[in-house]
Structure formats: structure tokens, C-alpha cells
Length: 83
Ligand SMILES: [Zn+2]
Image (cartoon, rainbow, N blue to C red; front, side):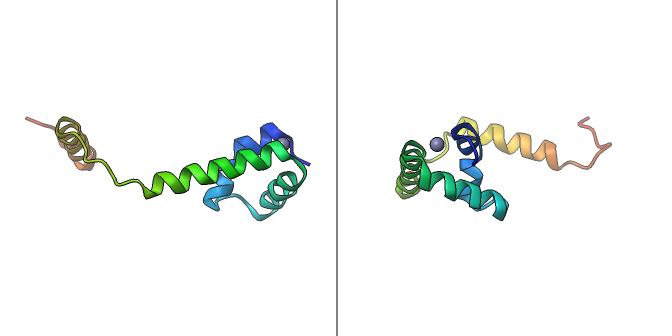
């Protein structure tokens, strides 16, 4: 059986459905056996669901401008320079 530490390390991938099947079985087995990890998992899932219910806050204008500038730099073809 995986340890509590191993479970915590892969819990995010498990909840996102990105964990390999054999590893998921190990996580499920651990969650059935370990009350503290079971509670940790339940809390983790609850927090994710609650935060998904929150309305998205608008991005501050200065951050939006910096992001746009960074993205335009990123999308420029290699070798092209600002004159
Ligand atoms: Zn545990």
C-alpha cells in the first residue's frame, strides 16, 4: 500500500483524473484504509468544488497589459527582433 505522503503527492493528479489506472487503484485502496487521508481527500474535493462555484474576479488592468505584452513576445517568430 502507498504511504500517506505518497498519496498526498499524487492526490492532485488523482482528482484531475490524470493518474495511471494502477496508481488510482492504490490511491483508492489507501483512502479506504486510512481515515485521515480519506478526510484529506474529501476536504480537497470539497474545496475544489466550492472554488469552481465562485464567480471569476476580473483581472486587474495592469496585470492584463503585462500578460498581453508577454504573450505577444512569446508568439513572435524566432529571429525577429524589436527595432
Ligand atoms: Zn493515509
